[in-house]
Image (cartoon, rainbow, N blue to C red; front, side, top):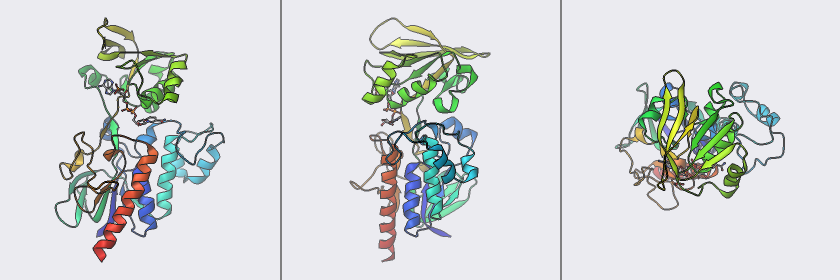
Length: 349
Ligand code: NAP
């Protein structure tokens, strides 16, 4: 059966595209991705980056200051609510926000498959996508919203201690016993690095924030948070040279080199958290769409979501190396659905 719109992804861009497409009676089919060990390793589990963050204070419509837990519990189906940690604070969290978006999409009849798309064929009509079991789906249009995943430094020692002290997700791993009341390191100088450091400081005794320059890239508010935090120490002009450890204990330390010619420095830490940006998830496209120099999907019409193939539209971080916010991803998901709707209407005419 040929679908009107196939949507690949499960972050804010994908769910917003689904909400708009469903309300336009296009009966969208979303491939939200599968929960697999490979996806865990690659940072491409379903529900995207929001599902791996903590409080979200800047998404419009969810001001802090009110107890939000009761609302979340009442809004979500119990099978989805049961995955979430109880919210005893006054601020919505990333996992809650993305679950609400998913729920809003299903309320309008969006169909969801827990599958990864591993291959596409955009060379003919209808457009075809193939899931990991080999099942082929046909669509008159496709919206790609596969997001981006955490980057690693590429050190052999980093690879050796992945999941034994090396992580790219403080929210996923920070509460593990190996980090509690110990010293840990966070690498990076952006908002994610500060957020991770702040989160880890709830469990760890000490958090070293290691940045390659002498100024944080993070927003002023976030940077102040790191600078004022009694447990966070910022080490300027440093990059990891080697992650130290052994088979028995995993990570035991980190060796840092200076970017300004100072002596190397070794820290005793039980964890190293990478927060050095993201890589767009485009591997499954295998050349089917044009990419930018930085590897993001190229938008071919200014202020639109068109790609190099007619009928294929793009939304969210997989095409955004600049804004990278939940709200901008959601906005572009809306745009992609409207673009797809207009494309389909023109086909009918
Ligand atoms: P980012 O802003 O791109 O920052 C990446 C950081 O890693 C930069 O400080 C960069 O250093 C450093 N870095 C990159 N490659 C490195 C390497 N090989 N070795 C050492 N350091 C390296 O990424 P992000 O922090 O993940 O943030 C992405 C987007 O999400 C941003 O737009 C951010 O505002 C947003 N975000 C917002 C929130 C929030 O508002 N609560 C939370 C998280 C993320 P340089 O500075 O020298 O380039």
